[in-house]
Length: 120
Image (cartoon, rainbow, N blue to C red; front, side):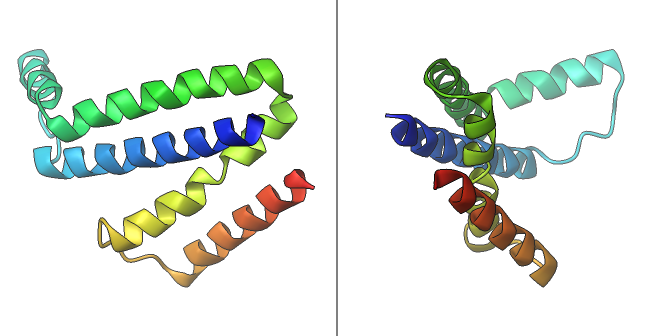
């Protein structure tokens, strides 16, 4: 059950963060921080389907993480859920078309190694 929850957390967090990045790219940079401008930006983001999807995915991830914490130790849950970094790096490269440096690939490989260590 705990590995199913980890998989759910990894999937929903990854989808949520990729949707969040896509939504903010669609919206554009926020440069005006006056209260009225922030209100307009917030209203626009509340109508952005990528941001809405991101919020829903991150909520699912949050509740799955709470369930995982109720059945396993924090020292397992946090490192296991770090696998999101690997999935996010892959999706950033292949879905968002970002350049991922060799150093970042090496970091993702180290995360895989760490997750494998705790699964033993």
